[in-house]
Image (cartoon, rainbow, N blue to C red; front, side, top):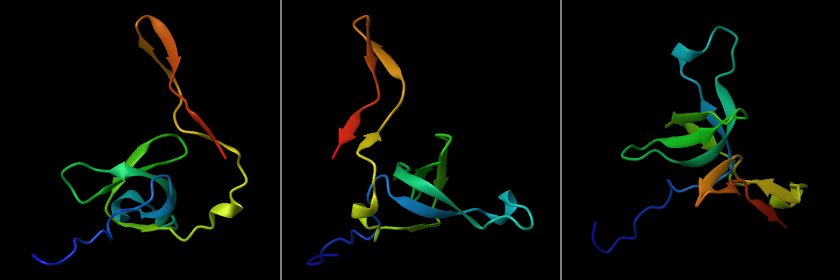
Length: 102
């Protein structure tokens, strides 16, 4: 514990693709054993990760393989949308989505 650096192996890049294991109880015969999802964070007070599917549904899982060796130069999009929707502050409509350009 002392004189040792803490392990950072459990930390991953946000937004990265991961193959998330689907438990046997949730799949039928012939279904895939994993699903490609986007990593969006960590589940509080557990050792689980939070993932989002293409329908913006959050899935919590401990079993995942992270594709952290992705070549970022192969990504052709110039724009990334982080969030969708609006929220209200001081009676003004403010967009929730944020655009990031290269």
